[in-house]
Image 1: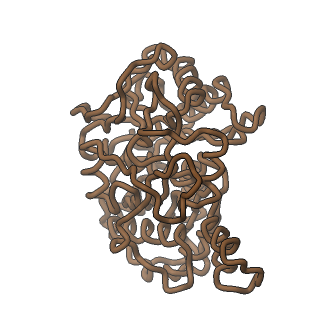
Image 2: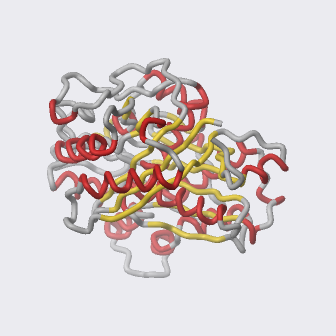
Length: 393
């Protein structure tokens, strides 16, 4: 499937509630691990529910040399893990030929929680500076890439795919040779309270596409990848992992939170066109799959509009929770791992089929099916849609 302008992924850096680093994450999604646990980041007195998918492997996190918050720590950890996998030494890279692009919903909103909790009004305080610092700027600074192309993309829960897609464009257009990109978000009281208030927190397990689905579990973490032109990777003696075949993005802008199946189906078709692929060539869909009644029904309808006979579908949020701006990027990493290791990750927590979600969902246990092309979804509030296509090398 390679073309002369091929862009490949050479490093994977997942930071999740079920594992930090490629090997731990891969082992966890193979066995269908759940990241659900009681919240420890803030007091949950007075809330009906107190569980989420927190990152607990603190010892595995790489601390920035600067004063930084939790989301930036996740992003830097993922970036360094991905660079190590790619065999890239940051100091040996020309910083005017690289990009650091990070998708996020809330950035360091957890630091804003701390400001409010501690009554801090001084905008020059350490906590205030952490709240306002762009994640991409901190990561680029830590890597010594002062002249890098840097951007934080705040396109809600589609942000991780947007960051990868933007990086793909930068590489295709010759602006940069290499990109460190993905998404990062940290669990915050603000985030949890908002979803709790509108009644979308699941009382138990997340159950995407299940008849008894009740909502999401908030999560956190990062999904960072290293992307390069194929020729650049080969020249450096780096083994490509998977190819970034193409992507599509669009917007509904019709309702603050309700997705539009027609616009999502158009986004899927745009991704197929960019990747020069036909629907029948897609062997696995890594769904947005939040586990909310509306989202899963609409996503099913959109898939059915494009695919006469849909391929297998999986939803990794059943394991890692909804990590917001990081979620689509982590889904992309799960897609890459599935292709490299020749398996299809499960959708855990599934117990009863729903006629409104009549998709071939891989339920509760992985299969030995080896996907060759994976379609990764990321949709967000405000009607932002993103679809990424990855193919096996």
